[in-house]
Length: 471
Image (cartoon, rainbow, N blue to C red):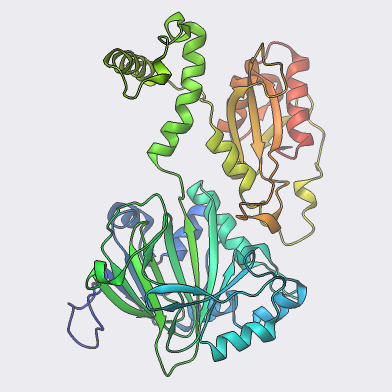
């Protein structure tokens, strides 16, 4: 059963503990993570806390520390990434800046010790040992740690979390020598889960100056005061803290090096982001029906230094009109956020050659076939102006985007070009597509389309893209 931490200052406590500290005995700790479903996976990741409790009491609110006195999760965590794994990765080609950073916190500032070009393990190890530098490895889920491993656990973990959160999930590995610190106090614009893999890491957390921050920022140690929470993570332990939480971490002196993995999510996934994403589509639709929105703005309005009272009044009225249109609607809305998420996320995890993601299998769908959606968590449905049409028409189409053909090796690398994979259909197909999405299985002939030919063609298009199967 979960137990609250002892009050600060008692026993061997190093400082104030997070609001709720859990210590799990060997009998209660998870021996392996549950990959059967996204929700089952997340429950096993934060075990023994229940997901309902986590989102009610901790998510976006306060840190959670889970300390496990159990060799099973400790052994599993240690298998995810080790200092020795860097040698094999370097031999396959990693580069400073893109894949790895070498840095150290000096007098409250981050000092970057990167070289140019390709990173060599002997040089990394030299900076690690002699300069007490931290090695930060970017997005390790892009790499198979060893060609002899049957599973890619970080890909597997993060793909499940992207399905669970419906948001991109990135990661970094931090390897810090004893008696050293890699980064100054700072806060991030992401929700953070820390998994301690090797050694021990001493953490200090401070109240946010910008709750649920939208950007990264370094904080001067003189401004942040005393830590609200202070503790040491050991292998198998997990820490969560919300975006905006000021934090710093160091490896205690006299001990072996520390390796920890940060898993981060929910960057640019706020209600404000969704509003920005949604409103352009609402305006597009409303302007097609309301001549007032198509009327020109006053002459020289753009040359004004301040917003005029009349402009503010008109804009307020239009916003109320848009709110009235949105209230209670179940209509599928345009969303670039959906497209961007699916275009940039990991492909479905697979241990083989991935043929099931690119080559349709089983029976060809016919009018009398029963079909069902597959890879549902990797597909989004949205409506957008026809991207293949002329600027004059701008007819709306329904788009299906999926991540089955995404490249794992470019995941979370913002400078890399990504391509959105999917299909488009006339807006008249939206109800039939919703049927497929909401049904565990459905007959092709029952799809809400006018002709049997349209029904068969829709099913065939989805099957060719490996999005449905015949049952």
